[in-house]
Length: 350
Image (cartoon, rainbow, N blue to C red):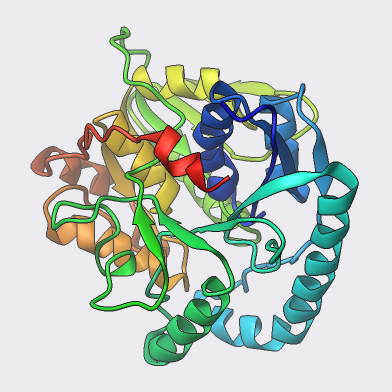
């Protein structure tokens, strides 16, 4: 056991996926006698505060990454924002150095936060992207990412190593100078046999303004849907709000327990093709339809890959119609990997 060593767990606040996939890791740290400390900003920090009100939680500088209204402009916007992001990473590094001293931290787990590491304590970086897709600059963004990850002691990839995997070429590269461990898909959910409540569950997530653009489009289209719908906006607020529109129930967000029940009582899931969502749906053996975030190469690749593998259909945001949901019956759906993670071995670094 660890005699209550404090481990800083810091997910990136970009959509909710980085925060939610840290939930099983935080639970595992607690079970093994560590004292996790949460550090993030914005909705990610808010969500983890609600999940773990008993833990110390600290605010880190915000990267403030926003999407462009047009997906094709996203790369340009990111390049334009990069001086500010680099400045934030430097501020983050200083903040982490202070936190280590102030809270006597023995280890760090950073989910995609580039500045959350320190040479004085073992530092882990979690990512499913050893290859960072960015169109014709993929080689450059991958090299840049590799350079950042090298500053950490280990890189944990939440996927399986072999041919049967979820992340495809994103998490599997021919050679890498990074010390990599494949830890299997991470999900906070369990599959349960529950009676069906909803024909369709819509789960939105991701940065603005694209989350809102898709919300507006789907709410309009779903007025003509013939079936029961649970519409989860993916907006973390002070309290859960709920409204009804015919056979559709609209909710701002759900806690882990409520979301687990919602998934297990829904026939079909309509969502973004974010990697955390894929891991969750695989764990729950769900059928899904994906609409990747416009301009996000990673989500577009994952959706396309699952479509080609006949696992789940997808289309781009502008082309989506309700009729496209009928395609789902011709696809296999996602399935569980039955992967057992040895947390004792994994946490031995601390």
